[in-house]
Image (cartoon, rainbow, N blue to C red; front, top):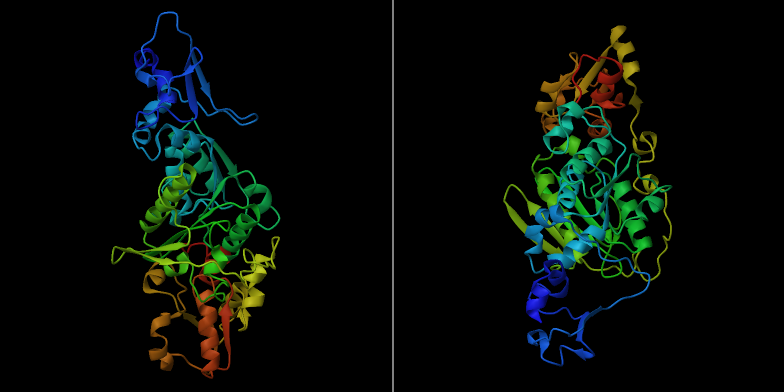
Length: 442
């Protein structure tokens, strides 16, 4: 019997598992006799024996995808892994994964998912490639600056693996469209860089019963987890509420090691592949912490919160909400408590030689990139030791990169008794965009 099967290589791979045993969902009959009960695969055959191969079937299911010669070569290292093998690669080919955010995390995650042979990958992002992205977003190059991220990423991934389908969603994920977009995918990879979208992704995943492969980065630290409300906690069980606006700097404000998102995004891809194939133990109920400076990994347990408003026993949130409002970022006007001055107002005052002090509270490296010549430069961490350099008798306009750090400094100065302090709306980024285009933007 084995000698006959060996003549048909394409048949043999479907009959035997990775251990060389006959698959349990396949029965082979010689005449009317099941070979398992009558000699097994070593059973000798007569020339006139009729062989029947009867696999388990279920009406309506999609047949397992076949692989051509190119795919067998491409995925040969996966076929060699008992934990993945032919069945796992078929599952990958049938899977649909959505990557939300084509930034530092989405780039490596989507790259490795495409290389692994995930059959359908969706990409969501509304942004265009910026020069500052190239330090960490490895799908893009200098010639792509100014082009839509999802379009460039789609082309790159298709050039890597033309056997898969890539869908580009060039739009910002919102309460209005998230349910529609996420509905077409089995697993969601969260590569977002802001709290409103992160809570939105979490909630839609809970509503639709889908696993959410979470990753986040900041400076030299990364986090990875898999949230699946059917089996464990969701993101809200870990962080019930977002931090107040401005308390946690963005990567643009606080910086990020360019290699870090490559590591964290790759870990997200691993978790998505494990989830699809069933290999290993998923990071459900566990938060993986990576410290690039110390080169250490730690993990902590996450418990499901029975009072979670989304996945708890009595959920109070059962449909998308106003996530910008929930995170306190509905608008600058609502989050800034100190008076503000527009960049045009500041220009008018400088043109009219008004008695005004511009206080730049950014970091030294930012000052070297671009600065307003008239500004007094005092980084935030040196502020308390240099208060004597700030004249309280004049109008003070504080600025940083976008207005977040300077808002906190403005509030601090007011509380220290400075009578006339304003925050520059939009920071030097707005100044370079609207007033002085010769300044480099970052």
